Length: 299
Image (cartoon, rainbow, N blue to C red; front, side):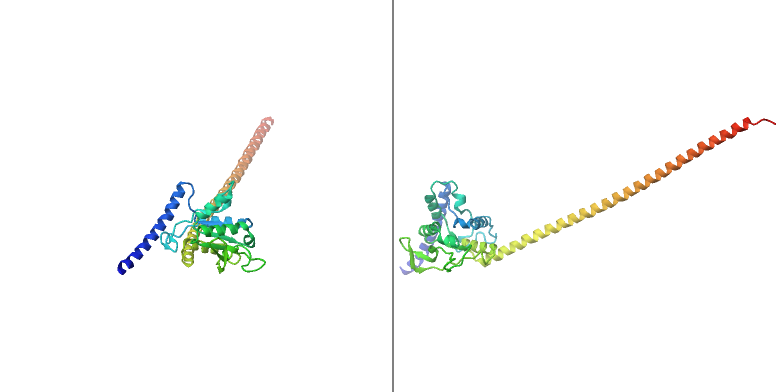
């Protein structure tokens, strides 16, 4: 019996994991057929941080996971090639009459939550409600934070909304006996590229270092390809410049030769005209002399 139980536990655990995986993807498939698919993440933000939210939305959706990582096992399952779609209310709910039910549905169908933190977000009732709703709908899903402005813990510029700092009880209220320590990359201290990769690593369930190294290698390959293309372009332009200079020099030489030939032709024309004039004068002088000779009396 003990042996059977020992064997049965991993089997049951594996079956439960497989059932959960199938349920997740089946739900996504059914939702997609019904026009309500799942989201890779939900971005919660104050509208004062709209520019950061737009950048983050584009940065995550346009990011291509390095091919060497695609399909490998991450902390959250097989790593996909893209993180799409990302929910952001400005794009997804344009013109909606009732935001409440739609936001609730989007939060329930999101695999992760990203909160853009700032003093304005910390005071936003809307951001507070979105975090609480996501935690209630997806108690096991990850919540990520990004600092756009402010200083955590500072009484005047605190940037973390309260639901990020404490767990929720069964009623959805803050349980101040269970404080949390959110880790959030800071856009004020780090480059956007680094912040983006840290969030993407968390969403993929992949180590940031591995993602960063592969991304750096890909960046170097792209830079090398661009450098090669630039070098080729420089060589082509140099060749064209040399050809253009050569043709220009030939054109100048031909123009000079043409001018010299024209000048010589003009000189020859002047000489011919002068010879003709001299011949005409000589003929007139001969006729004059003949005429004088005929008029002279004979001896």
